Image (cartoon, rainbow, N blue to C red; front, side, top):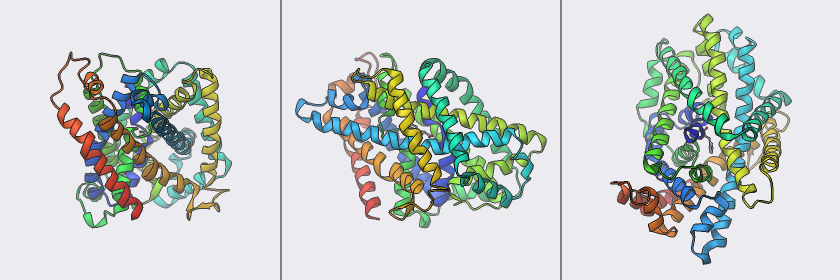
Length: 438
Ligand code: PHE
């Protein structure tokens, strides 16, 4: 459940609809689903196997399972994974800060008072996200919450949040889907999501689908290695990985169904970018009368919880990594990660306002890190992981993990091994090369 909590987050509800909208809806969806089930699930299994076999954090996990000669290489790879994790956390904090802000604005009634004028709601978002230090304070508040859970014991906090609140979130998204689908003209949104138009799918779109699949499943940066290292010996890795993958995908699809029909009905642009969810959903709530205000508060609170369980997994991974050698205490490690990631998160938040003039490779700081975090670093880490899993790690260890030391059978073992050795590395390589070239 904690791993589901890590996978299900802003990636499903905020990022999936906006990326899907940007790259043309249905065609993107097909490529995304292929990546999720053929590549993402294999990666999820690889990371869980590596974690549980080594019972270590990414920095030492790969090295401890590799032949002696190759160890320095795999330590370097572990470091690359945690750098990726750190960048992802810093970017994640920006959106989490916005989410925290929206909790506040729905409680204060500001969102409910705007009616259903798409322009007014979009302006509100623009004003909020470019509002200088105000979104930064919301982000700091969120980071403090994450730190409290990490310090106060992961098990109670994360487990409680995942077990009780996640199902409530799903229920609420279902309500939103019904509302969104019954708005006038909503059918165009369903068509947009489910009827593929491959002419809109560029090589950048394919790379974005891969990046989104990895991001959404929390793979390709070592988080699942850490969670795998906490997994009980009798847990079935295949079943666990498939459950996480299925839940994550279902929630992304539901989020798409809640957002796109409303996008078309209310006259928003489906390629509206990072603000999409923050503009569209308040509009849907405002069509629901007095109940809408309550739904709005509930929804943003639960979105906050979803963001929290994901951010916790990132902070947990980084804390575990830097305290692995025993020199730092847990609270010291957590505090260091907290300070550094919050500081970088503040810089990215301010890239919408005070730092909007600062450009890297022609992109704003946020767009730059978004690109690094979706199309460069995670695919690279994913490639390293499948190569390690398919070609470096001893096969006996892999088989032992999948069959729980020979006590359970896994019929698909040969297929998974084939995917991990040949299909996944080749597909990743092709996508990375064409993406970078394109
Ligand atoms: N999977 C999370 C989401 O969908 C984000 C995340 C990425 C969490 C990587 C941990 C590691 O929101």
